[in-house]
Length: 529
Image 1 (cartoon, rainbow, N blue to C red):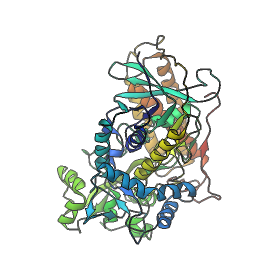
Image 2 (cartoon, helix red, strand yellow):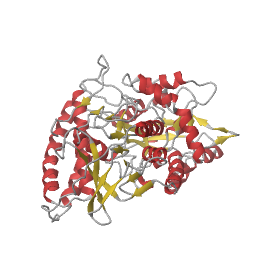
Image 3 (cartoon, rainbow, N blue to C red):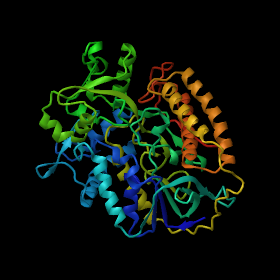
Image 4 (cartoon, rainbow, N blue to C red):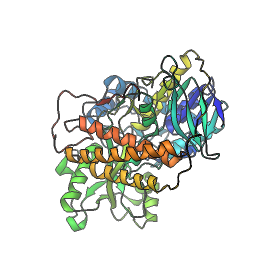
């Protein structure tokens, strides 16, 4: 079994992971470990853009206020200010690397999205994440000091406590190398989780197949606290089509005048003004609940998003990818509305960190969607996610660069001498399907005590089966992902049961009102977890 020594291990290859790697490459030997290929994370799927105050009629105070309003009283003010004030610098860094942002003349074109009081969304047409990721991947592959390990899945973090050593520190990690089907040992003084969110815990999600909560679950097992896991953002407008998998209709479509309508069979009328004075430009949680309400009220499979009042030229210029993809499915958005449905999109909670990305475990950092920094509160403001990745990537890199080098002891190899090959894998696929369906049914946009109890009961049954499977059989990526998803589902349900109010993305029929004071939900793992 192979083993590797580095100065810094980065798990994940989205914007958070690659940005951190580039900031550290000049002074540290960096490993980027990713379970598929570099381009297969969530960042490349982001359509809308990156929020930053760049216009003369905008201000940091306005961006901060918009973020606080969306976060429903749970955003950390210091974190929010830190991220917003570092946004222009982050955009400048991406431009210096050559990211092809959309321009208006010589200036960056700024669009507007729901929840924002001004035009401040920097974008590359309607495929910002893909443009940013392609640029960063090209730079990473040509940068000395960065070694990429693709098709390596995180198994677990290695801590001093697990090895029976004095003190508590992250010493490295184990990863499953799919090419050799063996578990590899990685040793480093500093480890960064940039593994993204956990959208695949739900049946319908805009996330790629890689979003299985690996970093959140591994950090929890290593003794780190997690926060606000009940706040799962459902994007209001996922494309509803039998041949469309996880395709998002960008927030910017509503920002540029898109209107939400009932289907003709239910009257074809616009409904958002009945739910909120901001109508289609209300924050995502408001819009998602409104759509959910109308679908249940009228017995609908979807609602419609109409942008056909804009000219074909405007749509080709601003939304070429959405226009093209819809056309491939027979939907002409220049003439007809787009069928849409809410879909799990973003994990607002995660591993608790400080302003340097540090977790509770020395030597372990978390950056991006895997982390709970205090920026998003109870609901993420559109286009603050890629921004958070970049600001905290730089902050974590700066903290690591300033830290004294730490000596790490020799680490044991992975021991699988007492396990055998599984006789059948149907248990994994069945449990995966069951988990995603009951999480969708019981822990979705609208929750009740009874639904959460049902979910908790099923999670306990799944845990027993998966623990037995994990203890007796050789591990596979499917088993590791299922184990992590069940762990994250447990954290989501427990957090939701603790919040006896409705706030932001968490809406309970049993507790429909806000409770005071606003407080985060923090879960602490058992000491000997």
